[in-house]
Length: 253
Image 1 (tube, rainbow, N blue to C red):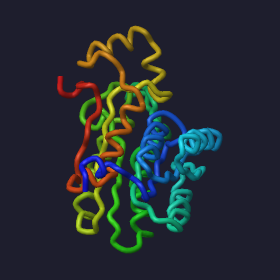
Image 2 (cartoon, rainbow, N blue to C red; image 1 turned 180 degrees about the vertical axis):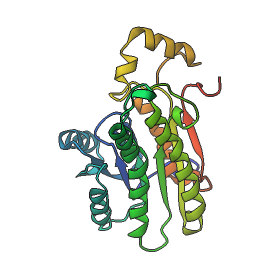
Image 3 (spheres, one colour; image 1 turned 90 degrees about the horizontal axis):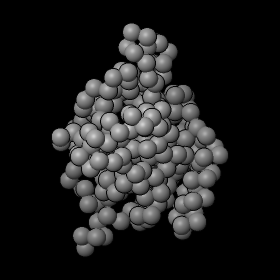
Image 4 (tube, one colour; image 1 turned 120 degrees about the vertical axis):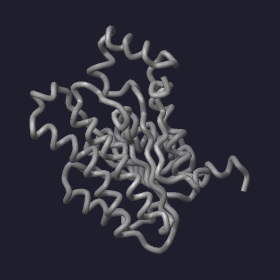
């Protein structure tokens, strides 16, 4: 097998959550460009349809699943729906945040962030494994954050969810390795998306961030796609339980 062919996702079916916008959409487009058929999952149908149309115009294949991942019943239903097709990989890119001082952080907001960012990806991976047939190798990719490794003030629930996600990744990697299932994480630094707009749209805050990043700029959503394709492909066939940080050098500095 040529080294370049190892990165191909041809004849594979990959689920991408949060695929309607931001990093999730960029990952879905990269996965489709690498040859995979993509199951697009998000809660906003109009965004999903736009993502599907973009992928199809580029010659790719995609299906739409409008699902609220904060609802455990909806996740179980999605698992059953996806059992009708072979799933070779999943990227858990759906995520939310809430910003407030810890003393003022509401219980409902804390629970909602953990439900979407931590509980939902675990539950969906679990459902995919429950419905898995045979021993076909597969790859589960979770999306972490700088918050998986460091503190982010005024984002206690987000940091708790992303730090907890690494525990899920390592545990599932250890449990599922003999089943031919690999589990890894990608942890982005600061990218300009709707999720970060509240912060990066403030000139002073943006300047502070960029001065802290060795590459002196925010990431572009499309710059995350390569890491996802790598972890989904045969090029990473001996990689499991790991975290790939894509942050312009933030943690290294």
